[in-house]
Amino acid sequence: MITTIILAYTAKGQESAGASTNSYKSFVGGDLSFNFSEIKYGSSSVAKTVSFSAMPTVGIRVGKNLVFGFALKFTLVEDDIPSGYYEYSNDEKSLGLTFFLRTHTNLTGKLKLYYEPIVGRTFHLLDDSQKEFRDYFVGMNFGMVYFVKDHLSIEVKIASAKYEHISIEDSDYKANEFDINYDIIQPNLGLKFYF
Image 1 (cartoon, helix red, strand yellow):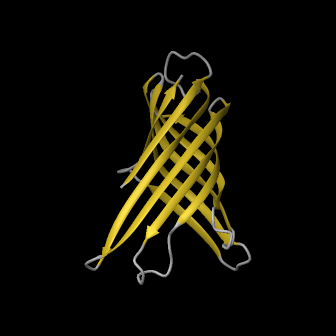
Image 2 (tube, helix red, strand yellow):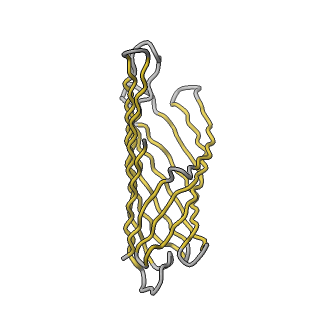
Image 3 (cartoon, helix red, strand yellow):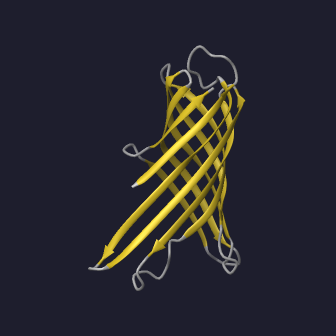
């Protein structure tokens, strides 16, 4: 089960009588995610995986309907797998830096569609004995924003597309990945407070 909490605080740039994504100068926020899974092998052996991520986000309005921002995502994954089942571990400790441009399209008076192209890099925090990963990505996020009141909106991230290139220092290993993700049943849900 994945629990995601997104809180974003937005500073108003001018007085507005109605809800508007054009009435602020900047916002700060982020999300938290926690995942725990347990798989049983045979009668006694149990594999457990715990993952946690935190991603603070900052955005600054640079145009009438355009926001430039960045996000820092810290990810920690720990596996506890019984010996003899796998020769590898999914343990991970990483810090991702993402830059984005966000814009909105009005669907109704209070409902807006947002889309944001992204570009960034993930830094894998490894032991000194391990080689450096080079991990770059580009992509696009899609979602909706609904203004419940003039100063309160609900934000739902619905889908994303991402291309990622990974290589390892002093190694022939290279990987190119392309992902398209969407989840209507368990979308990332968040709130924004406008001041």
